[in-house]
Length: 559
Picture 1: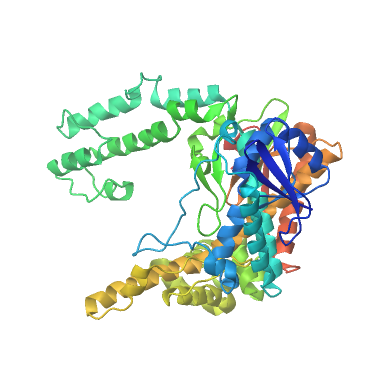
Picture 2: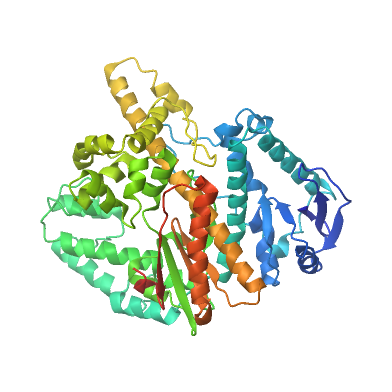
């Protein structure tokens, strides 16, 4: 059963629709106060809710204690269908707004995040006439379903899986933001005091930074130096004969000037103070929980991003603050060597699949073709995936290609497609953006200098598409893993058994916060969900996707 949920001037409008988007009943108009109770009642029928975005509705419903099982997220699914090569022939794709590159010289990396979700209290303050919201959403859903119907099998089944997993992730992202990462504020503050000193007044540097600043001013003979100003810092460095072109760490380390050690120390502490200092703690942690906002599909490959709080970049030196509640554990699960294993599955490389049977894929590859040298095997394989084909990677690539021609050939073909200005597509159906007009224009070069620039741009795009097929497919596996894990955790609760809750996700890593008595069941659910994700993505293939699991009190103990 599909239920359409749209804003209405008196609250919300709910309408039952067919799988093709046609209405099968009159709209039910519900006031804002009645909505949680009505949704809770309808959830017993296990509908698939159809809405524009989970962020528009689900946070307010969760606050009222209402959990939802399934949805079709029109915004997330529409972005996939508009840009997928699989649906390029459909009317939906022809009429949809395309993902456009805004930089003519480099491949795209991220999408602009969507606008902030509508405040729940103001959700109904500015709405369209009765029924207009439903009509628009129903038309969009019907167009999306029609586009999927035009796709031939087996691509259709894969695309349907992708849309379902992406929609499930929309729900999961809201639930994780609502639940929050368990966070000990007092431990975080102690870490800051130990490293930076006491909390300074607003607008002042912490003592450790102030001391380093004064040291830099003395060494560089610049009494008013502001190390936080790149322009001011560059001028001071140049005046002292430190001829660097930037203040990046790798470039600064090439100089042996006495100012470099305190400058690097200042930059490291400044990053901590700026990214995860007291102001961050005040803004993002409340009630013992860190509440970031995730952006599902925020990267063109399908990886998640975050809108605020740096959820995807919790630095190691404050991970001790991520601490389980009393009587609970953090279960941190990491999909080991995910992208290389995804490449094995994509390429159907039988010999590399043999190497992947053990938990350490790199060691297996080393034993087959690199004389047991694990580091060389790792450098070669990651070079193939990421396009690092010069230096050590380039030297090792011929050996890798001789040993695993199917795997190397798979990413090489993706690179050639990108260099030629074509798109590539992941296992389930997400396609890379088409090149910009500027990129295409650059390839119509006439002079030798223009040709060199065009060749560089083509190779750059080839590196992007080479990695896109692997990273994007790995993101799809992770989405299936997340969705399946959520389903299993909910099933435990439905059976009256103790269960945990998903609280954190980072590309190939999940964190579950669980009571002590639920740890074993949650660990099993994590492992079984990883196996299920492989089956959903690739079928019964002889490639394992092992998951490393750590049961800990605090995040810093996980690795």
